[in-house]
Image (cartoon, rainbow, N blue to C red; front, side, top):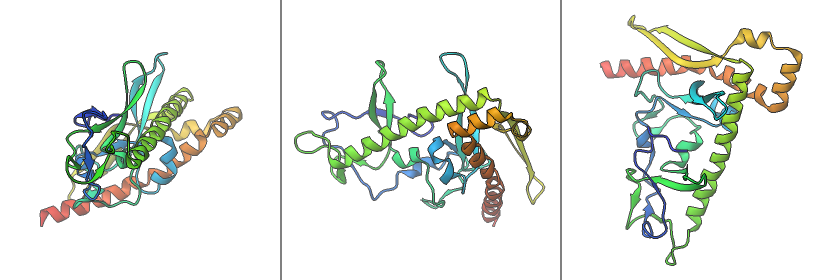
Length: 249
């Protein structure tokens, strides 16, 4: 999955053109996330991510049948371009979303609906002379590259499952447009909108058959993880206030 806010110049990995490409694994690739205030997360990650981040939903267009799609995201900051969890060159939370762990690599679809491994050519981790080789002397993938391919392929499978889960949540009418308002200690108002979250009234009025269906499909667990994660908005607010206070000194 290619994210244009992260993958600035995605290029298909080619065993001929990139025969000598290497990765300096000791160098963090996550500097590229310093401007991201939210990022896509798969449903398989909800259980871990909900402990540290708010998990919200963004509208993501419609599918081939015209049904509404949503994308779940972990929130890193309260303002556009603000990442409160990547500070001083390191990720400060224990859990890092899978797509960020895979960066600067990702999977991308081809015109014939196949998938290929891509990499962000702008990432400073790449070198022609230093680091871990992606191809051996015969031009075959190294163990390291095979591990990368396996990882991004697994992510792509989860991306599709997540897309289906979001579509089902919309069909159930579980998600509604929401807004978060707060006032900072100095009196500055702060508002966050443009996101969707589970509507508690709708949850209360679910029929028994709907609850059974949500449980059977695993969606009920996702709903609970999402709702539990909402308390982390206050945590981000505290970090935001602390950061602003430090910048004011």
